[in-house]
Image 1: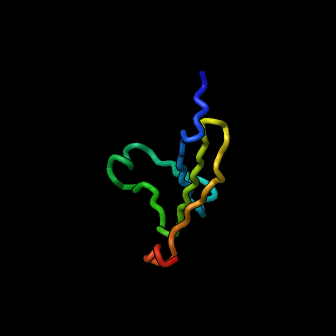
Image 2: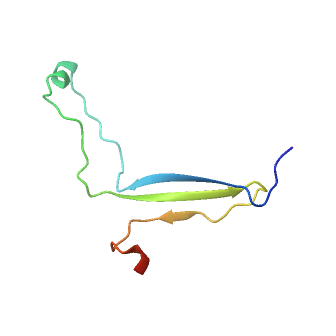
Length: 79
């Protein structure tokens, strides 16, 4: 029997990187990699992350989606 308790929720979080339009692909041979002549691709540090939170109740209802962005100030309580 399906649990239809109105106080039972399932929550999930997913992070997204903002500013990436495509994946970086590089081709090189194994000897160069093993000789450390090439480095893995790194990010330049100017990307932001946002988190999406979804919450669904056992009775089939859902809460509105929530997006969490990086805080502009270091004091989150004041904002």
